[in-house]
Length: 348
View 1 (cartoon, rainbow, N blue to C red):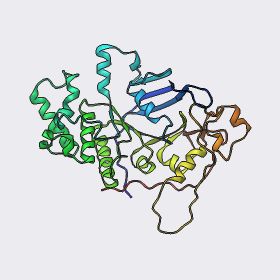
View 2 (cartoon, rainbow, N blue to C red):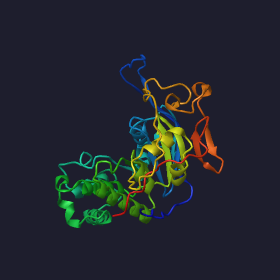
View 3 (cartoon, rainbow, N blue to C red):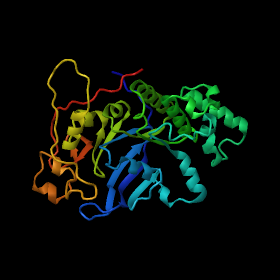
């Protein structure tokens, strides 16, 4: 196992989301409904220099939330505040300045890079819009070399095209491009899922090192729990468009409060050669359609603790008795349950 790096954290909240909803109009499903609510009252916060891990099943709304935070989608309701300001109310130069502060690293390290540009051109492309950041070609070339060195590549790699790099190297170029504007927060949408396991560990350790040096905050989206445990300070668990549990990483992994979180943790693969019995939670029933989500608690149709009130009322966020920052949206939160949680990714 590896020890997670101690990261410098500033004071105060950098990014705050409250009550955000987002609905898409899609072809009608079996229920006759054509309105898919991808986000349903999302609230979360990210502190300066902090990593928030966002986990959940495919289709739960993680990527829609990422696109909303990047202003690629406009929420139907709710607020997004960055340093106390609403980016959706910005225009012109004010909006351009804000875009420097929030960047994104995408899942596919090849599809997100322009094959007709070399690495240096890809990294320096954001400066075409932000012309005042580095005014001369000498400044830009020096900064490209610095960024390549920062992500573990050589200055000579600036002249190579994406096709000449491995998957891990391409993702390093994507990270360098995200850092080119000196952002305060980076949205990482499954940034290592397309990479081999050994390369994953290298990229994750690079991200940890960069955060330690630069103090940048991350919103780290992943379905891989071992990866999230390695990088995240806090975790938010999503299910059918809602965040159902939040808390410090170790608290959520070792003492989950929501039945879905406990089932998710117990299902994660873990290397074990001792032959000891594992407490695996097997969920019953089908995953509900987001076009026709259950009333009340979204998870009640698969939950072994569900009662009548779960169908009638949306559960409030109930804090844990020993830690008020660890809360779960559940009428009957788990008190103590031992689950098989994944080990952190080993250092390389």
